[in-house]
Length: 568
Image (tube, rainbow, N blue to C red; front, side, top):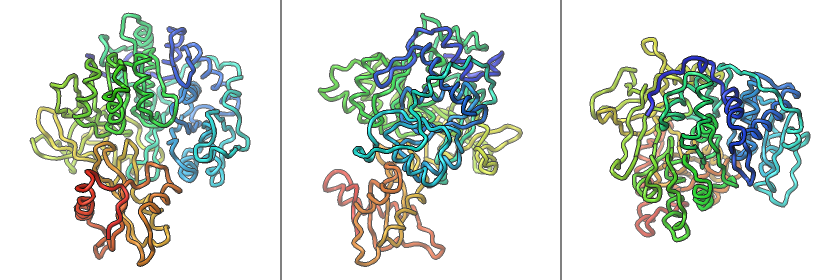
């Protein structure tokens, strides 16, 4: 397995558009993408991206322009991404679960020159347009009726079909430099989306191990070497299936890496995760690299594999299964290995802000229980920013190496998350660990109130604001509670006025009307008071204990807590 040195030679000027152009010239007839019944070779993939890039240029887009992609995993997502890279534009990842208010906020922040979305999400785009001006170029991908109003015809004024933008003559390949940017918007700990700002050069440098670490090759030092590796027929062919959406860094970066290798990217046919479709796709397409999101995806996947329905599915070709930033239990790892005995399971401790910080690697049942080990360049630091090395002590994960520039237009937050220590720049998103010795660590969690549920970040204050606007609700607190599948579940504790009659179902419905579905509380407790301190604060540790006590009777009776429990 290759080491992780920095790039050298002309890879100092690495840009994904330039690399992908070179790979497309080297393997034009190889399949690049299989999605929604469409199969594109590398030549076809490059040509469609070049035609869209030509339309972008004709509409005034260029370097530093932003292109908003409000879409689930589709071939058009990749084409738009590639087209933006070809002209030095910055793609903006938008959560396709957003409602109009959330979409408008992100559009206002990113100020895109173009927006690409499927017809199923037209209602959210229409609602956003009532709050913020849409860009002059809006392209619509036909994928069926609107998500929340299947019988409603939704037209976006000025929008054009996506395919009409592919009628332009292809833009000739233009060498792009490493300084062009890639934004990864993340909810972070403030609830207001922030853009982590990568450059192409830094991102490619940080991905060297992920791209080449499992191959019997030396790390390339030139674009010619990158192309030769991608074109080699004697190397294992990468077939990558991302099950999480590409709006998340782990899925996006692994898809980009697969294209660097001249591999094939496979997408499921629908936005909603279907474990049966996933099992079929793995077997049918010979998937070798599977991207998951911890228990939230692996649980339903192995349930299908363990059932009579999945008994005939051959997924033994899986070589690597990757997850990042999510709870992935040893039990589910063991069950998955029973069906994919040759797979290496890689549980990554990372963040949109940078890393990786640690890896938990499982090559077989003997590697369980899985323990994360610090990655090269990662250290544990105290709040005073000094090394923590004694076994049993706690500290925060930090990483030195290739990393983003910081948060876009947020120098104070950047300085906090990317401190310079003794002349060396680190990234520290705030993850706490306990040192176990020999490089191993035990994860303790993020030192903030953010709820990480199924790979989605939920800021409690955003949900609390909706709850407090509900008639009859006089106080509310939202927090995350442990859950074996989702890692954490959003839990609401609300206080209502006497006689208000507010039900847990009303609380859930109200949040669902205003915010994305994953922000809806899965558990709701209605209580008499929150026992705030004189300063107005809630003792969260005490509240967690109280909720545990409230849920105990329901758990004892049914084996699991009622997801909408009303307690007085």
